[in-house]
Amino acid sequence: MTLGGDLKPGDPIVILTGAGISKESGLATFRDADGIWAKVRVEDVATPEAFRANPVRVHDFYNARRRQLQEAHVEPNAAHQALARLEREWPGPVLLVTQNIDDLHERAGSRNLIHMHGELLRGRCEDCGTVHDWPGDMSLSSPCPACGRSSVLRPHVVWFGEMPLEMDRIYAALDNCALFLSIGTSGNVYPAAGFVQEVKLQGTGHTVELNLEPSEGATLFDETIHGPATRVVPDYVGRLLNAHAAA
Image (cartoon, rainbow, N blue to C red; front, top):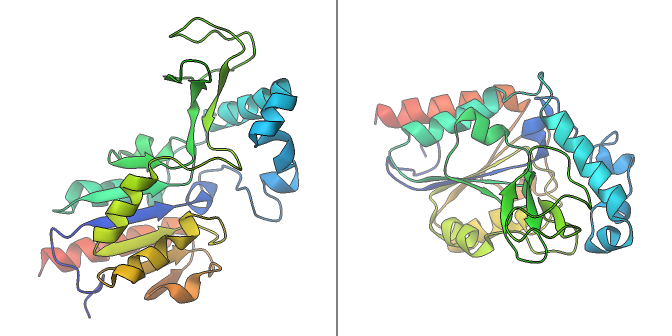
């Protein structure tokens, strides 16, 4: 079996990324021992109920995260850049699905991208439903640029108890991909943790985990490579492109 299984140039690739890929850019993860959920209760800041009960606290939480994301030292790392390279150079479709709400993939150059958990630098109006770019602070007094109402904007992120975005498009891509890469994920957050099983159910895709350490679902993958994302992702992408360029 060649690198990437029986992958041929032009075959579709689907990539899933999680917090582990952005951690090396200086962003805190959620589920590590020292991660965000070790310091802040999910129930207080990341549910629709929390927003209804105390919108000021929820806005303050996401405002702080927006500011952190835009600090000068937070930049795309070599793993983000390698995935953008794969999209540019692979002679077939490459879909990047990220659980991350940061914009580091875009800054690295990725374009065919789904933020299944939403985007930190965008806001959504709960009244008219429009989504707007929102790099600054958001508050109850912030008017919706579309309908003009205040007290109706919320972060454009998927909270616990809400459905991730664009799931139909994601599953359609998983069902047709020839290679599935899972990068920097814990393997315990669904539905993303079940993507590897979806690919294996179809029986046509090779599955690879690239992670700092084995995820909870590591044994489900055809191939596992463990180490820092900034090392293992550029190495795998480089070998994949070189192998199929020479084929």
